[in-house]
Image 1 (spheres, rainbow, N blue to C red):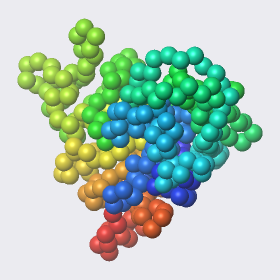
Image 2 (spheres, rainbow, N blue to C red):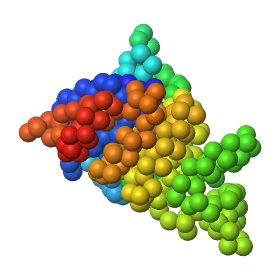
Image 3 (cartoon, rainbow, N blue to C red):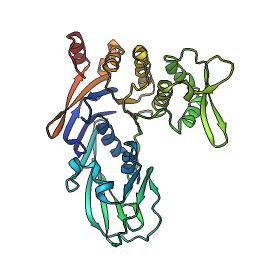
Image 4 (cartoon, helix red, strand yellow):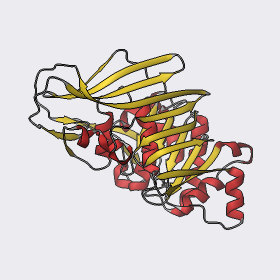
Length: 355
């Protein structure tokens, strides 16, 4: 489980150090204070072996086309776009610290043959006509105890590529669910695995909080398309996608919790599409699922009702399983105010605004 996060020079964060994350951690704050960025920073560390790591960040922000130049492709992750200052993300996980440093290299001695550019991580790239045989690169340095690994993302006439002296295995599962995630393309496969293992009822139990009439779920294949269908008692099964944004999103979240044992699921705007009236029961189900599948939830929210519902769902003997973090912009930096269960309780009893 991730219990601490330190971020330097990543997007809005000049320097941020947060301790006390728990089984369920909720993050809130005003617009543009870094809630989504916090999730992104953590995810980049665990997605370090992915060539499309940074393009995926851009794509999740709605950028679908970029010029293949450092100031377009890489500078957006650097604080104030200052690409000459190293970015560092580190986490404390299960008592150990592991970190990833991004360092821009103006020249990187690597020769590659020119080729088609196409798309990288869902983002179209545009040829710039650059012909230098010395590439511009982003160096990634990973460190965990006495284990280290270095890799390079580089730009040349042929496009974007990656080479590593040694690829450090990724043995800790981490997923990120953007705000517009209603369903995931791998949801049917995840559900199928759970169904085979006899764990489908756990997913049904969570979804029935929103749709009490849901009797069963199944994967339906039509051509190249796989969808999860549900029986709500109308005489035929229908796609879960037709049952509303909240239910679809909750399905994706619950499937990730169930299949990311001993891992972390990062969720942007976790209450999206869910009516405030059912939030307390949704949170009870999520706390139960996180405990059952030994998985961690780190989510963001703008909703006071969401924070209140999460707090109210904490069982008396599980108060150490909930942490609330409020981010706030302070001139050139963002700071974090960390509240454990007792602090949140005191705030609600005093009717203080803590969002």
